[in-house]
Image (cartoon, rainbow, N blue to C red; front, side, top):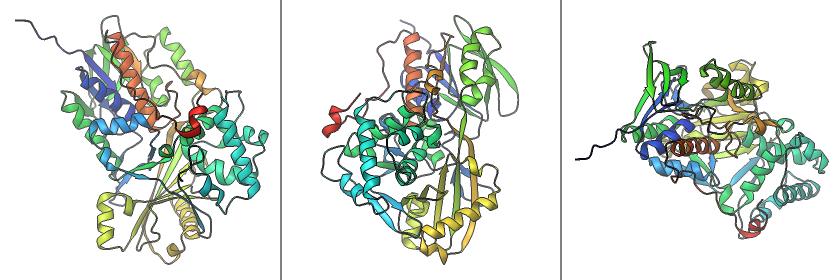
Length: 476
């Protein structure tokens, strides 16, 4: 009788999207997965918790996806939560004073499918629209290389008006890349434009209908159902690799240190947490040096609860002010939407400010006052509403800054140590710091690990969304 081989063990440090994606893929492949997460919940920077000051379950920041995020969609399908995403085609832009404009698709082929609604935007002049159209053509038809110049400089070189920059490029790119235009590399901006224009489906926006941690707890269940283990409030302290195993030292929820041996290790940590766990050996120096080139970008979420409905929109882009997006959580979250339908008496909204460096040093009350003032500019009904409670969540290290030259320092998922792999949206994924980039990194790390284990034919990365219409002629 043949003996069943013992599954190889994999330790994964980090319970964000990168770590969860890698863990699910490897658990499916027969590995014995153990995931360590220092927080008391899964999801990393895409998580939710009960806020002690309000008694409400809040997301640390609103996260959205688009149909172009094929690996994130595949991950949701894998763990069984794809039906928890609400998809939208329309995107509403609101000016101070309340005038709104809606972008939606038409029967025209890509990239012309949004042209009719774009051309009707009242907040852009004919000159603005002509400049933007020329820029989109340039960004999609020609390969953009990192020349060390920022996208803002590119805009000035390509005849973009100040209104086009403020009312079109900033709302789109600052939200997508969480950085100011003068600190965004040209290829990243071009990728956002090209991917969002490649087909009518590409720009469909998905919003979770349940709290983020509920979404990703399902991934934890998926791992456990395949004999994996999840250890919350447990952090990796350091590791020591050798040719046959990796020795890891962890601190558990009781603050006790212990050492274990595993066959493989995946570091699925934010870039600013990796240096802490690297061994004090010369072979760690190149990665340490790369890490010094990364800088953080903050995102601030402002949560407001009103005593009455202030809008019938589910979400909106807000122009010309500090706040960039409004998400109407009363309508988006399943449990709240049901209550609102039966008793439409209140609005819970989350406001998002990406690249929110100007808010970091402001107090909660200062930020709430600013938000309340701006909300009342955009939504006239809010002027008669009473604010019942509020909170502010600052994710200081939300993403890495996608500045010129940063791609040269994004490491691959394989490392200098044959049994240690890297995952995280900051690694070399071909995508910027997004949930899609995080999942891609997890799948790429899992593929690299399988290759090291001799399983070279297994692939996890989902194919990109195919281009349609005239965009099939413009792919780089």
